[in-house]
Length: 234
Image (cartoon, rainbow, N blue to C red; front, side):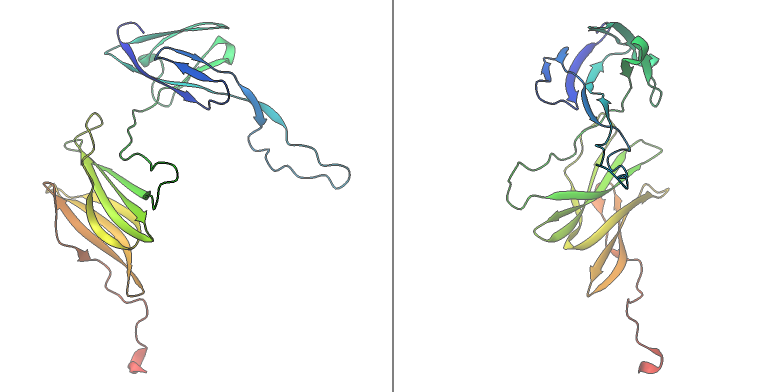
């Protein structure tokens, strides 16, 4: 890497003897697998069923570089590949060596909360994420449902931007039966967290405002009962 540095290298679809060596070297090979869209072929009316067709599946590495305008040079068995970050903008992969090498730029990602250790007792399962970016400041918010011990919690975290760390999650709603979340902000710098919750055998939407790092009071947004009494009270 010229005019920059390689800070991380991870394998993509690595198997068997595929391996990473530091931040600039790796060894991997492609392998045949069932062709996309051919996993469940129609069986012929007569004769023995044919196995699904196979083709080489690509694998490779995810390289993270740092710098104002880094240039990456890859020395591979088929030849040399050289590119800059500007050569492969998001959504526009670049092909080299007659289609043997594909370079694709990926957005920076971070893990808000790592998964539980294997065989952990009552691990937390995070699901149904909602993401919001405040257009004036670029501040980012993430809310999700965390399931543990047969109960759900609605959690919310924030960060100042893609290069900042996520805050510790705060609890918008405690243990209960919750399903999905939506986020939206208002012009007075207030974020609203809205989710559905089942209480007393009735599903409704609930919301809480969030401003300056503090959650406001909960608001029930849909007060209509699921089983209204029949007309006349009968």
